[in-house]
Image 1 (cartoon, rainbow, N blue to C red):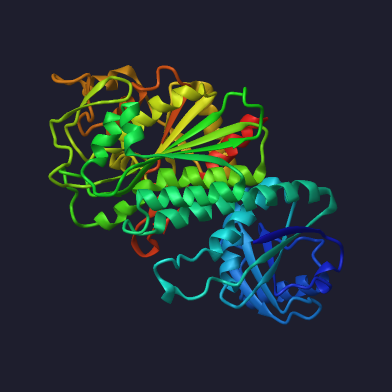
Image 2: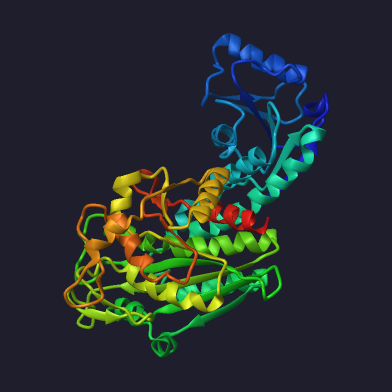
Length: 484
């Protein structure tokens, strides 16, 4: 989508050529500087009871005298915050998106800074996304291809910067959603690697994909143990964005790429198992974030690492009670084969030590326990590093893609003791998201590390079933904050 800003001047709505105009109102009064024809039309609608100046309310008007755009949508925001503007923008776009609108002009009451502009850009991109890869009957995606944001001259520079950031994040989120929405028989580890190559080539990134023999040579016994139950070969994907000198330590993102998770021998219940195609949401977010970063070109280095395989039951599959040796040399007693994400991530975390990174964040749809703890509002964030945790929290708030810091007290580590290996891969049910993070922590002694559990935020169930693209926004904002 093409995002542009245009300086707002008196009478602009009478001259602006667009298929529709979206007016975002804030609070319970019409702005005093609103062009008279538009103000009169909205005031009349309020008088007639067609519109109430309450958050979430919308209105559709046709052929407003004195307004050049043939369609006018009005949406009311709770306040001038980016979150409220995004919600109102999404509601307003929803009013016109099925009407063949290709060019939408947006006029929001009050100051529009970078955060509000970014929010409108991501709302527009979300509104027009339509999954069609395996559903051609879904029809054509909404026609919206251009958004022009009308802003005061004093706000123009900030708004343009926000739109640019929002456009890049929107591209990354859309790519992440598309990858995660594909069925497991389409988005195999091999296809995921091919899509990563395609993105990397288009954006000028370096990429390498390691196969089973190379992983065996590296000693990734834990990752390969998960992969051994499937006929689909594992892939280990490493993408490099270089925006600074090679000597500058990179930021590293590590994504869980279980392209389908049956649970293995510890088989999951059949109900809802189809949603386990989303178990590569962490991997999808890494690809999407690298896509956004490449477009924004910050002056730092970023490496995206993805461990991709299936978790399947077969005569070769990992069994409860098996002991595997990780790349770090630590041994793991596998008490539950459905706790497989941590088994692939631990080898990936050991692998990235070679980059001597400035910081490492792993992203994984790791535990149902995190769903219970936080619901779908916040992603779970774990880190022993206060500064890194603070940066991630701030990035989440800036991106409207929030996380919540969870504990990593040493007492939780007791649950991972094993009589037959250096550790077990699960603790008890209580605090399951925390003991999973404690497991990963055992492989991060040489790293500044944080873990994002996105099991509740990477996709939606029910009538709105589908990937969300989270936490591409959070990760992109974090990377940009480190460039500063």
